[in-house]
Image (cartoon, rainbow, N blue to C red; front, side):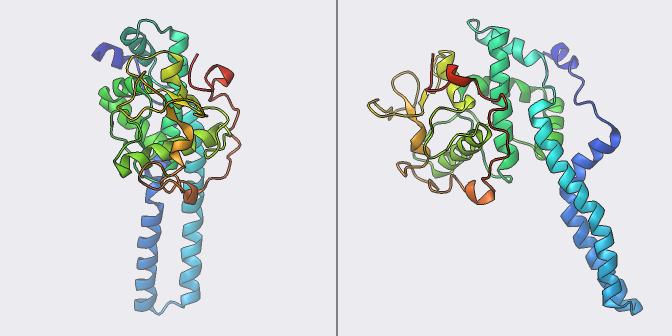
Length: 281
């Protein structure tokens, strides 16, 4: 495992980009400190308030630009930045019936999960797929590589939590709702009335993962599973918003209030088309 980890050299970028991404979250703190210092200086030195405010605006402008750039850059990186190549091979080793091409699709599902983490304003996001969770768990075992990815791409460290399904715990349900909301948004799917499944929620069924979580976009006429998941039944896409489980069903765990407009990413290749839609092949 150590030798495999050594083949991953991390994200390659210039020093200034790395520093800007790593510390962009401190922009608000720096602005607060600058405002306090300038206010104190203006009081002690008799500086006119208008001049003090002008200085604050001059200093705030570049910090704001860095924060805006970092947000845009992270949204690009989560789609394009290379993940360790060994993750795909480790997944195939764990699931021998999968091919490396299948593992590439699972990696895209992991990126979709990271997108949900990135867009959820530091709130808990739950993993809905067993096969994607397996790849995620392998990544987190390589602590330094995973920590760098989180810092630069997501903007915070994301602790690993095993894959979950909707149940009695409201916090878990809301974490899944956030994942569902952003996965749907990425593929231009209506999260309240899905016509198909987003990639992340379709992979377990598509690859017939033992103990995996089977989701269907439309559960009309299909028996729902009220147990712990798996092949005994299916989970329904509409269950994330129909109020049948505890938590914030109307707002998808607060996701709608955090900005639910389309980013133009739908149809960009994150999904797997009709091959995944509906929950299984």
